[in-house]
View 1 (cartoon, one colour):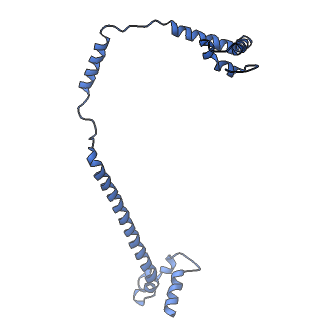
View 2 (cartoon, one colour; view 1 turned 45 degrees about the vertical axis):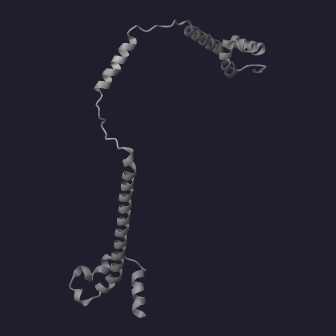
Length: 173
């Protein structure tokens, strides 16, 4: 049982069920009733609680009509007849779940491998262009082509060109 010297509103309202059922010891019930007299909010809450419980208990049992079950079962049968036999989706049997999952995973892995190969091919082309660009740019045969002759103007400006340094190191060795 709860031991209080005084009750606050939260403690008081927490004991409403036990007060209604008569399960409180005399000391707690005395404190609770004193709080209900002194606190207008808790007193109103108790009257509402007690009134709602009294209304709930006073309701008489309602008997359904004699044909209630037959009517409900008839409506269920009608709904079942109106429901299409096949759902809007095709349910896969369980034996197809594993192969379908394997096919999807194989497809995803193939895409990943293809993208990696494409990336490697792009890297190889870019590397070859980086190596051959200075050589092609300085060929006398191609001086007549404006774009190739002026590639140094098109390329981004930089004080430090690692490709050019690498080529100079290769030519000097």
